[in-house]
Image (cartoon, rainbow, N blue to C red; front, top):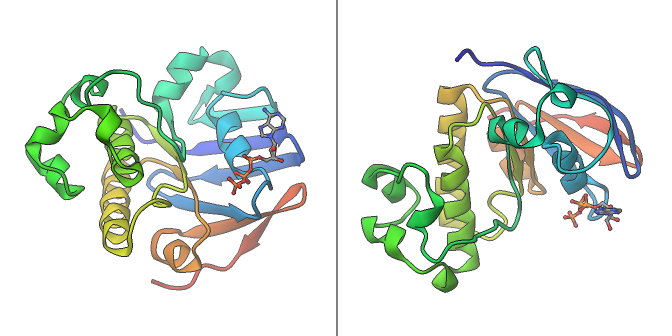
Length: 205
Ligand SMILES: Nc1ncnc2c1ncn2[C@@H]1O[C@H](COP(=O)(O)OP(=O)(O)OP(=O)(O)O)[C@@H](O)[C@H]1O
C-alpha cells in the first residue's frame, strides 16, 4: 500500500479550535504544550476516540466515513499508558515479533512469555510501542513515547522509532516536552497555546 499524508482539517475539541495541519508520509511532527493544554485529547480526536468538529484525512480516506475500529487500525494511537488485557505479553501480538525486534528494544526472546503483571512502567512503554508498530499501521500517534525511560533506553527507542517511521513512511504526530528530543526527531514542531497551534523552530540535527 502506498504511503499517505495525515491531514487535520479544522479540528475542534475541548479548548482547541480550528486545528489544521498536514503530516507528510515519513514525517515526524512534534506537538508540545503545557500540562492540560489538550495534547492527548487532540491525539484521541485524530484516532476517533473522542467526538470532535472538523475532519481527519488519511490520504483520500475521511475519518468520518470510516468505522472507528478500522480507522484506529490504520491511524494507530500509542497512549502514554498502554493497555494490557491478557495474561502474558505474547498474547497481545497478532504476529509475535522476531528476536531481532525484541533485542532492538532491549528484550530477550523469553519476554513474550512474561506475565503482564511483572512489567515495569518502562517495559510496558517499550512493549506497547513494539505492539503498535507490529500491527503495520499507516500513521502513528505517539503520546510521550519515551516518558518513562532512562537516558540510554530513551535514545535507543527514539532511534528505533525514527528508523521505522522513515522506512514505513508513516506520517507521525509525536507529543514531546523535551526540546532536545524534538530537535533530534522532528521536522516540524507545533506548540499548543490557548486554542491554537503556534509553529516553533526545530534546531538542525
Ligand atoms: N473526556 C473529556 N471531557 C472533558 N474534558 C476532558 C476530557 N478529557 C480530558 N479533559 C480535559 O481536557 C484538558 C486537556 O487534557 P489532555 O489530557 O489533552 O492534556 P495534555 O495536554 O495531554 O496534558 P498532560 O501533558 O498533562 O498529559 C484537561 O483539562 C483535561 O482535564
